[in-house]
Every structure is written in structure tokens, then in C-alpha cells.
Image (cartoon, rainbow, N blue to C red; front, top):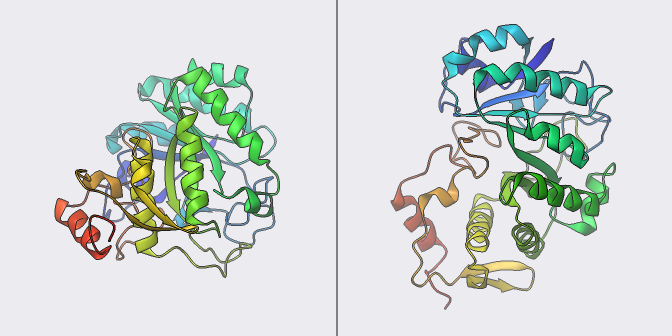
Length: 312
């Protein structure tokens, strides 16, 4: 049986000889299928209409290895978690169960990112070491959702998130949101509020244009906008959404009087032990999601660039 391994994970395991600029703290794996996904998400290299290299997901290459080879090399990585990504194809769910059984001797917690499944399947996952589930909402705008993710329904994704919370508990549904797909800041804020109100959490990604996808000519978000969105997510998570200052549909600033913003706000936010190095950016550029928290001075510098810590 073959399984895809993210390039950085493969280096950490010793399956590929190359230099790591930031070591992954989670092992990122993906189900193998020798073709495209059955779905047609406009941003994804795996989409059925995409002409992009199907060895990619976002900007990361995922070479395929024999499962036994991966399991043998696993201890080299010193990982704290396994994150299993899935694409849709005939027999995908059977493959997921086979992989989960194979992972059990590793005694690591497992996250699974998957399209909506029923409660019975979630219960089975729960008995196989899975403790977090990724929900591919991706698009924070209901008005754009069906255009960008034509094979899914907006309400279906939210119902799935609720099922996960019911089975696994609060905070165990990770709603994936991609910043830069044409949504407004207000739509992002409303999506964050909805996710936290149902007991889910939010994991942020930056849109990465990939040649061969329907959105190949679109632009990624500016770093400044992404930083504002990261801060807004953190404030909402901590019950401080009223400190976000909106002007129309845009985030204009923040009232941070008396609030100590931790550097982790600008790091990868996801399951425990997830740092997702350079998933959205090239290694020589400042990352959208720092794989490890930046220095406190970085946070202060960013807040200064906003103009002030309080609204004028």
C-alpha cells in the first residue's frame, strides 16, 4: 500500500536526503490515489479539472512511499502527532481505516482532514486514535462558496463540524479557512464567530495560487491583511471580538488596551504539535504562519505598524 508523505516530513524521516529549514513537529501524510480528486475545488492542485501536478497539495510536494517503509522510518522524525490528509476517490474511506490501524502501534494522536462523513464513521475514528478532525470549509464566504467548492454545500460543512464536536468534544473540530479567496474581512470575522459559537476551532491558511488550477491568476493575501486576520481570530477565540474595529467590510484596527498579545498569535494554529512549516510560502520569505512563535518584539513591531495599540 502506498501513502503520500509531505516533503518536509519525508526529510525528517530520512526517506529523502535534503536540508530542513524548519523541522515539522507533526508527520503530514496523505492517502494515495494515482489520479485526481473527485472534487473540483478551484484552488486545489488535486482538483479533477486541475492540470497541476497531482503530487502537490498547496505548494508542498507529497511523494509516495510504501506504507511499510514509512512505518519503519517513522521514529526518525520524533513527531508529536500524525496528520492524515485525504482526497476523494473510490475506496478512500477503506484506505483511511487501513492506515489508522497501521498507525496504532506508533502510539501517537492522529488528526484526519476529510470531507463530511456520518456520525458512525466519526465514532469509529474515535476508537482508532483520532482526536481531531479537519473540516475543509476553506471559503469563509457563503456567497462565494458554491463557485469555489462546487461539490459541497455551505450548510453541509457546518453540520459536519457540529457532528465532530458532538463526538469528540469542544475544540476538536478544526474548521480550515483560507484567507484570500475573495472574501471580505467581515465574512472572515463572522465565520470565526460562528465556528467558536458551536464549539469548533479555526485553522488559518493563506491562499496560494498554483499553476493549473482555476485560481492560478489570483493573488495571495498581503502579509499585513493576514496578520490582522490572525489577530482577529485570536481575539474572537478568547471572547474579545468586540475589540476588533470594523470600517464597512474591512478590519480597520483593534482596541488592544490592557491586552497582552502573545507571539503565538502569528504561529500556525491547529491541532496540538502542528507547525506546518512553509505550507503557504517559500522558505526565504516571511511566513504567513510561523512554524515556531516569533519574538515578542515582532508582535510589538506589527502593532506599531498598525498605527497604534488603540483606535484613534
